[in-house]
Length: 517
Image (tube, rainbow, N blue to C red; front, side):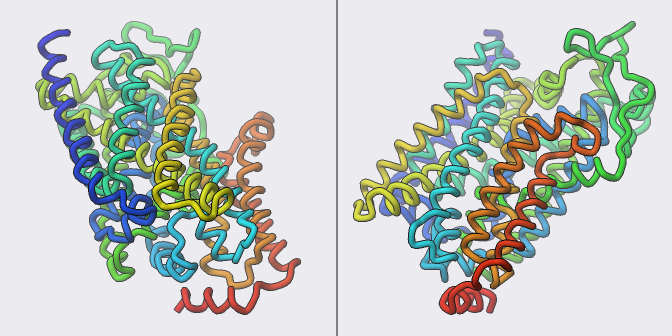
């Protein structure tokens, strides 16, 4: 290993040790009972809630996936995706956060999203709870796999290490401090990681901007790439054997590009709908100490989201202007942040800067593993299998569940799909369509019924899989992001079945009115 690589590794290693130390510190405070371990006894302050929600939500997708799309095809898809997510962030905090925080306590102090659904509809047989827990296991395993891909790409690209070994190492590290410290450790590490992520993005953006010659230099370099700076289209790289063609040092694009019509724009912005069903965000709303803190949290979260996503898109654009023919596949393009970080910073500082990627991946994967563990241990094991289980037993089942989802994530990470952006988009659609419409109906329509809740959750998840793997292959108007049609379908199912079935009991209606008040 070269001296430069050693310094970079030292910078990254120091960061990792700090995260593990936080896990050890909270290990003595977070293992007393399930509510402490899974929800930090609803003790999150506004900064922790806001940055923990955003950092766990954005993941390695923010520093690698989104810049990679911008680098490879220009503004089009990256811009509309980021805009949809920004709007979704604001609406979710403004519309859902306070109501869910209150309702989850009124619903017999529900501490997980599946448990909230079950208690909201007085589901004595725990059908909703079981379905939601299984959906969480499936789609969070995909999510965790995407984060482990990030680990593998980072270490294999910077240190030329074996990707399989790096995926496994990253999985073990995250699992270690999450197992120890529970939700409070996750929240505190996410606070630090959220600050590091946005700082790293802004630093790399500024350094890249000045090295590329400012606005005029960047514009001049990108002029030769058709549709690259078009917001209503995307550049179309000319590919040969899966790699973009380069002639005389210039990457080749087809002259017409790919136009973006209104349907595609709406489809791309539909990413924002996913927020209403994201357990890793919704559980932060449930964990806020006081509902009055939500306004402050919302302001912090929205500003963080705007700065981070703007910087991520611009890093991809500037990266293409600086290094136009360096990265020739969509998967390789996701390394542009790493390349800029290691090229323009001294090795030790570069290690700290690209630790932003570790921060993004760790802040997400720890949340995903903890939520799945809570669903399997608290919702499936305690509520369905062994209702008289002691709290200590539930905690051990949760740790075993983390091992299981970590193993699934490693398998997915090594399955061959190297695009973080595409892997995340599938899991995002799954959660958004399965849980999003039901969350909105549960919180804001008293007439929503239990049969409609079951049907809506199942129909949303099934439609995502069906649309992605069958319907979208027909192309044309069907080639839209699967979240949009699945979200609409689930909404219609809940509405129609609610009207076709007997209205909820008087007790359920009283709880709804108490939460609304």
